[in-house]
Length: 247
Ligand SMILES: NC(=O)c1ccc[n+]([C@@H]2O[C@H](COP(=O)([O-])OP(=O)(O)OC[C@H]3O[C@@H](n4cnc5c(N)ncnc54)[C@H](OP(=O)(O)O)[C@@H]3O)[C@@H](O)[C@H]2O)c1
Image (cartoon, rainbow, N blue to C red; front, side, top):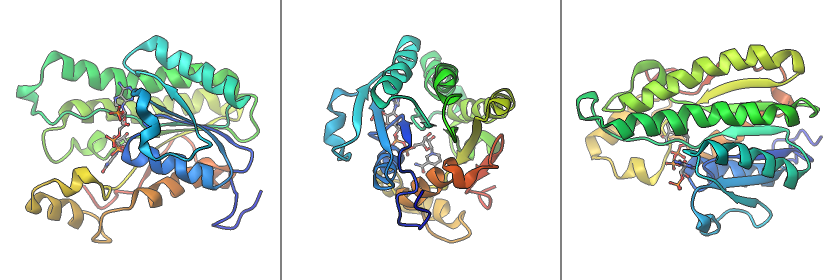
């Protein structure tokens, strides 16, 4: 393994990333590719190609609200990569509604995409990861899963809280098989979504970070993959929290 920061420290790794058309997902796919991994990039839209992913990334379309798709995705990824070393459950859905405004489908979508899909993907991945040399699963969570969030994200926060706990349970279960499972809570990302917030809210989000700035998706992607690589050999069960000053 080339351990230099700009080296190919994921050389030979087979990586599955969900939500690859999103802000962080795209950065994860680009970084994994840059570091020498072979990557399956998934999204629900067939035009995921338009999302500026590296040419070498293998695109697989899947709707994570569909349990069969979650399983098919893992088996197809493992078949096309010849196994799996790292799985990143990054996809998520977020609806900005107060608890009083929530509709049944908001709750259902949050549960299905943000919690049930990672559970099914972790289940289906087991048979491949247990054969890998340094296997790891990363579940991307959110400060909303700990604090409840700053504004109208109750369904999202509920699902992320569940994923934080599920991660700990699965880490215990998979640990004896050498598989690490941890969650990662990214700081607020410098994204279109953040830029579209009213100035006052944008300022509030930015000032919650002790560094007084938003994070670039590339910074979070690199750290996430480093922790998932063999450099993070002891990281398991925990929530790696990059937002510690936010609450
Ligand atoms: N952005 C932040 O500041 C921030 C802060 C804390 C935590 N996070 C977490 O970081 C992760 C990535 O966030 P992001 O900002 O990159 O989000 P994003 O840009 O909204 O991307 C989310 C991705 O999830 C996919 N997705 C949603 N529903 C799906 C479904 N039913 N089936 C398959 N894919 C589905 C979306 O696909 P489509 O492209 O088809 O819509 C999209 O590609 C999430 O887990 C989020 O909770 C983000």
